[in-house]
Amino acid sequence: MPRDPSRQIVPEDGSLARTVLELWKGIQKNVYDDTPYTETIRIIENAISEREVVLAGESLNPTYDWAYDLELAKFHHRFNLDWLDYHQQTRQKLYDFWKDSSERQIKSLWELSLNGYKMLYLIHGAVALGSLNALTIKNPEKAVHLAAQLGLFFALLGIFAAGLGQLILVREGSMAFTKIHSVLYSKIKWKKLLALGRYSRRRFKFTKIVDILVYGSVFWFCIYTIILYVVLIS
Image 1: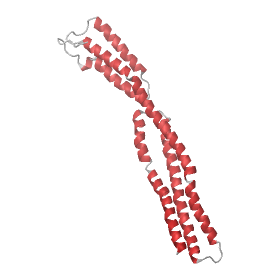
Image 2: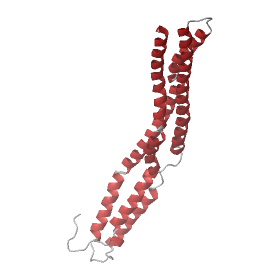
Image 3: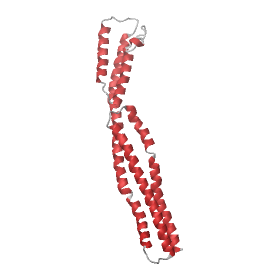
Image 4: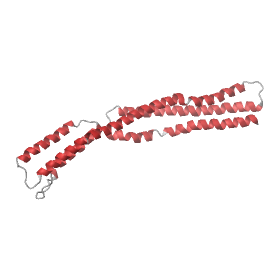
């Protein structure tokens, strides 16, 4: 419906269209915060119906274009109703993402802590056991004895680095995921749901330390294997 150019626009304090817009802003916030909003929609629909009755009675100030304001209010109401499902799905998708992501990461965390470190312990443990066996030999060659001592020391350092990395991963990871789960399974508002991304980036900085310890342990194995080889052939 086009606006009547002979009449003025309805003032903001009496405009139903502006009231509908403001109420819909609150509804959208409620949708994203997962709080009730159906009563507000009912209030809007009742206000539109009442304005139609008043407009039909011609009791409003004819200076203003009340009919255009009413049609504009209806348009805003219909438009926002059409987008209501989209807003609901947007919140639900983000919620599901964090829920599924945290559950997968918890599973991966435990699998890594239980299985991923076995290889590190095996390779360092093999060197440590070999070194201990060499140290039990009576009257070994000096190079063998020195290599056994160094091998045992180097292997223990590697095991310590891997163990420390595993300890940090399990402890800090469990605390972080517990915090995320406690937020997800509570009445979470939209701002807090969005903040999970920032929290994750800040909270999971410990993984850099874990990476240094784990990859350092592997690199250390390669280095001290070369050192032991040089000692033995010397």
